Length: 311
Image (tube, rainbow, N blue to C red; front, side, top):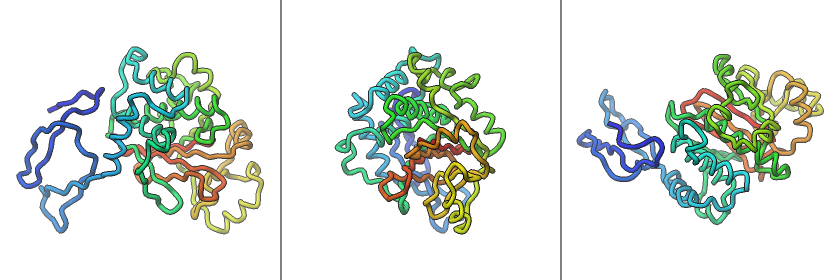
């Protein structure tokens, strides 16, 4: 039974009692968490165990309060957020989960430090993981378009701000998905920015100053230490492949040269922002570890797509 509107924050949820194996409706939003199998259970109807995610629940409440006036954001970001919340700007309103996903990523990037006091996101080595978990069919590719618009428009308006990027590399898990990802190209027919009214009319030309390059996953390969050492000795734009993680323990390279127009744009890049959308892991780096680039990875669960953007 559906008990909430997809356009509003959930007001109630179905609570599962693992002892009685029954559901009852409770007020408020379901706490964030995940379910694991009961240890040593071999039953086909294992009631499982719910594991709470306190950090996610803490961030949710902070973002909800911050949402009231979005303190700390740039003028461009504020305009985008107001546009996305305005239901008159598109035929179908954006889902609450889509708005909350982009708001959370913006909050983590632009909110004042005081807003994030006590929020300690664990690191995996030098990298910080950021995850925006969304259900299948909830519109994750639309969120990617929103994220690209947010990054590109801010970078074009504030070119010296290292938090933003206007060069995007999208990596698809197969040729079928690669074709579908054309909706992320601002100039493409049927692009999501136009189809979903994601960008105010006055900002469309700024969005088109960004560059979106789409590749299939087979153009990525893991390099050996010997290959890495050899490629580090070449000028970056003379290499047979472009690294966007070249100082990492297992660098990731594109196997073929990027198109000339994209390569020339990369020549002046000082930061790299990675938006990563895939079924598995998510990593990010704030640029404070001595790496030559800033890394920022985004994970939207249950999607077989990988995105990378270079600033």
